[in-house]
Image (cartoon, rainbow, N blue to C red; front, side, top):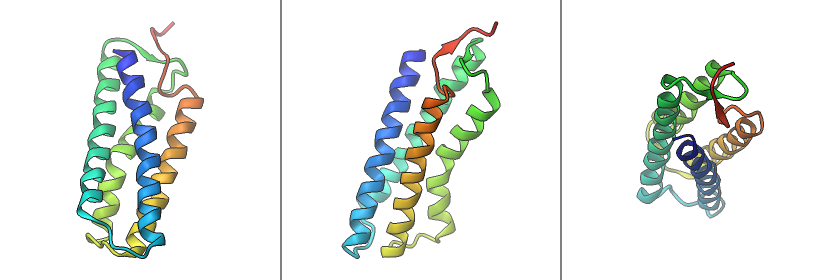
Length: 130
């Protein structure tokens, strides 16, 4: 199950990067955000939620990230799961060039945040507490 969590989190990192590039490309071309992008945002939120769910199962089974910082892990994962739909809500569903730029910046921020989590061992390896 820990390997599955790692695969999901790696997918999340790559998906964040892809969303950032996609939104930046749309903003650079001064295009509105497409319906396909909104579908990708929903997929992003579901992927982050699934990763959090698997992490919760690992925590309930008695494992924890090697860093031992469970609260920090949970806070970051909840952030990653709700922030993209939250930005959509905050922007009132806007789909103009500025919205594309905002989503691009947020996706790149999430990408670098996720890399930081990986580097600080907040997402694994999962071990039994000592």
